[in-house]
Amino acid sequence: MQFIHSNLLKDHTWATEKKILDLPVNPISHLVITLDGYNVTDETTMAEILGFLNKVTVVHRGNSIIDLESEDLAFLQEALGFGAPVLTSNIATDNYARELTLIVPFGRMLFNPDECFHATKKGELQLHLDCTVPTTSFDNGIINIEACELLGATPSHYLKSTLLAVAAPGATGNNDISLPIGNDIAKILLYTTTIPAASSHTWGIQDIKVLVDNSEYGYVSTKGKCQKGLLSWVGMGKTHDIAAYGSIKSGHYFMLDYDPLGNGMFLLNTEGKSSVKVRMNMGVDEAAKVIPVELVKI
Image (cartoon, rainbow, N blue to C red; front, side, top):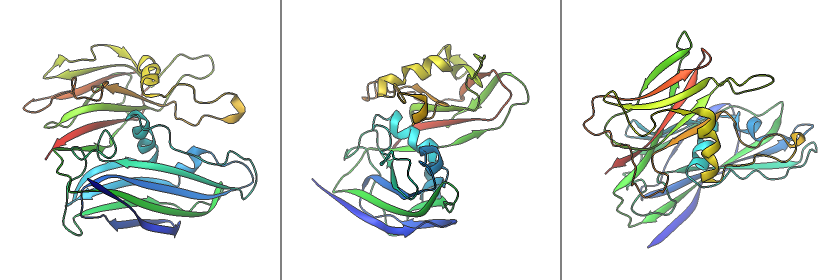
């Protein structure tokens, strides 16, 4: 089997815009988005760079396959075991170049001909980028987009991941969020706005369980902080050595993993179910994010 790795958008000057690209027609394993620019006065952080790429969306015939904020995409990359996004040049010098690369995956493993996005017709599959001009903390920004195609692949599944933005429920306590029904769910990524700080143990999402047709399934009772600790399973342990370095990973994310071995043994099957929900016990009345990672049969 042959792969083709090619540049789709080359050294495009960053602008406040919604950039749309037609993607290749061959089966696609993954996309690569590289953002680079110059420090403004001091060292530009990963969070600041991600803030300039508001949203990444892959659309097939009008339906979203990937629909995530850039921070969510960075966490998805780590949650799938692909490692932390590469961020170059940890140097606090004005106008020193920094580069950050994100992976947009269409399977739980890269280069997998059985799990990637299938062949399409020209114009059916598009990448939408919602961008903002870097100014106060990152300037002279440019974007490169590349794709890895798998010639002749006939996949049985592809990965789908779309953001469910959860509004503040109006009170603390249980908040039930319905998950999509029909596909197997490999992982459920969660974002909590509040995490413990000075003299506080409080998390925005304190406790979680999953309900399938109103019966507990898999995650019967678990704390957000305990699931955060289990991210070491996918290599997300220590985030930095000393406070001055700052964190390279968001402490606001954690995961409910229904595919810990990567072989589909424990997938959350939703086909034919009437109700699939995440029940979040909110320690703070605030907004949150729930991101199901689905496997779609072709």
